[in-house]
Length: 137
Image 1 (cartoon, rainbow, N blue to C red):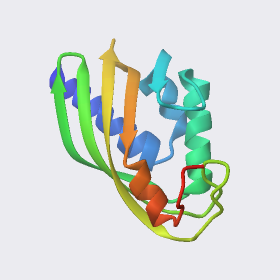
Image 2 (cartoon, rainbow, N blue to C red; image 1 turned 90 degrees about the vertical axis):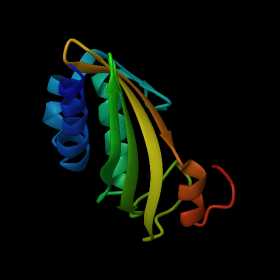
Image 3 (spheres, rainbow, N blue to C red; image 1 turned 135 degrees about the horizontal axis):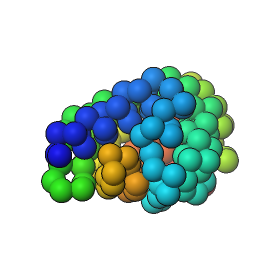
């Protein structure tokens, strides 16, 4: 089961996030999907809004999985995010054209072969420094 859960998370990053194949959302994410720490909310619509906001700010965003660890119904991924800041971010940071690279950790909960929850932790301070923001918006 652990390998199956890891493959699901790989598809989440490779096909949905990096590939931009938003049609996969109903195949990979549970209808009851909970996105913790997402200001746009949960569920399929919340994820779509969050993804669209990120793609506007960072249209070439790519996530590289460095570590993937699975146990029971949880999968933990250590990631590196690379992108170019080409659109408004967080409502107040105008595009800078800067390339950014920052790290993160995601914890996924899998239920019935679908992602039902994700806790998303990113080095937001490191990202903001790369964008030249001196304070949090």
